[in-house]
Image 1: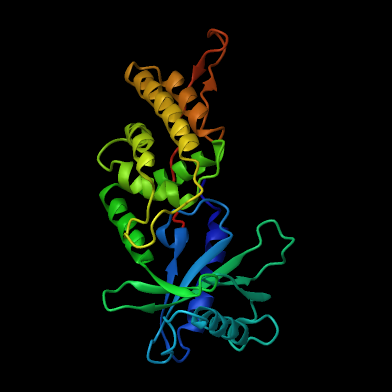
Image 2: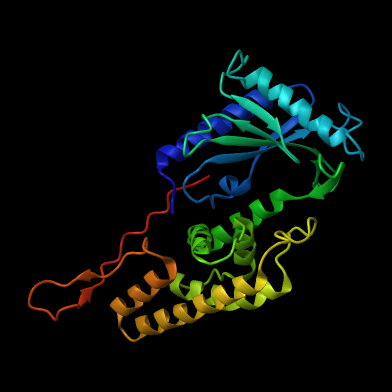
Length: 307
């Protein structure tokens, strides 16, 4: 589930190139990392980076107002990116093929579009408010709204400090969602993990506890943990996700029970059933043993930093 370290290094280099170029522009106060890479919960492959540009409200007094100011802010960012980082004459680095304003951010295309792992950087202009929250634009809705992406970054960091397996386990859960028969946004799993993943037990017990609690929690809706942006995925099929969580709970309970009974092979096969073929299967025992018997040899767990 971890991205190749060279891929992570490339993502960092491109992120830092954007930061270095943009933070020196007049009216720009900060350039911050955001998204799953900033939280170190990114799954492989690393194909995008999210950045936040904090502008000085005094330099852009019309920003933050309803109407066309959201589109205007995105155009300012687009022009900066092309001037500083455009692949045809960028004054800092020639990196970006196309900078295209979307609803809230400017999507900057670096690799050729036909490349399987084509890399993009999303740059969102914001204004920082007195309470440290951010005003973010919406070109489609023609208004600005309050958000606090830094809150989630801080919460994930806090959990990781309490339990060194928190971020890797979140990545396991994000990978698990790909095997269920409905679309679930990555952020939904992260927010459920904040509420339902304990930080004071073993990884198997934590997973069992997560699936048990999340199967109930999902019924109440998965909302922005900072309390500003409401429901994270309005089109989420709650019933399908709940059913998948309940099934996962049952398998996790069986796996933990098998481990308690000393059946490590049986436990490994159950975790593999739950988490997919990337989970190591027991190895066949050597000659002189019963046909079909196994010996489970755990893989060493190495958490490659993803942020």
